[in-house]
Length: 202
Image (cartoon, rainbow, N blue to C red; front, side, top):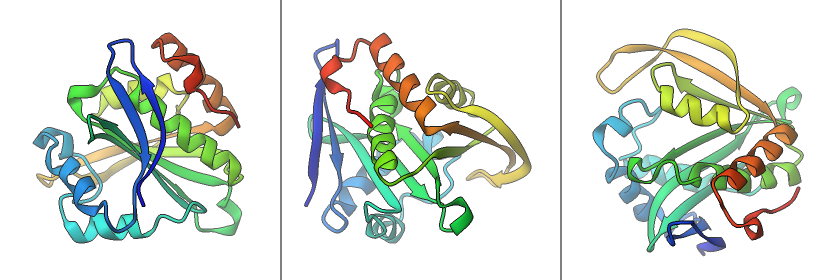
């Protein structure tokens, strides 16, 4: 079943609920979030997240061992989604990929940091030590947000991705040590005036 992790009241008075989704019953709820995004927000996504079969397959992977997902809700509606997937190979089993998306109407509220904080705590329990993410080079706002959480540039893959219109783009690889990210997340959440009671621990 869907599991509420915690609730936090923002300085604005809005109550954000962090939730772990059910692998079967929450397929349409998650798909509705993706369908409700502006076209430009979906333009650079890696997958066609509007397809029910894809959303269903991704949720079915969740196992709290190698695949995790946290969503943020406001008034019962999903406004943010974050995933963490561990590398399957023995020599990189300590590495996991983070991906996140917040609805454009709800950026700059600390929601990205809140979801990341929960995933980082889960990763620490699973002995994940290093995190990475891939971003299209033109997504400058997202890159800035990731830098705030401690991610640093690592490499560029030239003409590696195609957007929904078929245009090629460079992909930026950013990475972060898990312990460093934990500190940066706490500092960032404090700057955003998120109540100290929100913070977990590793």
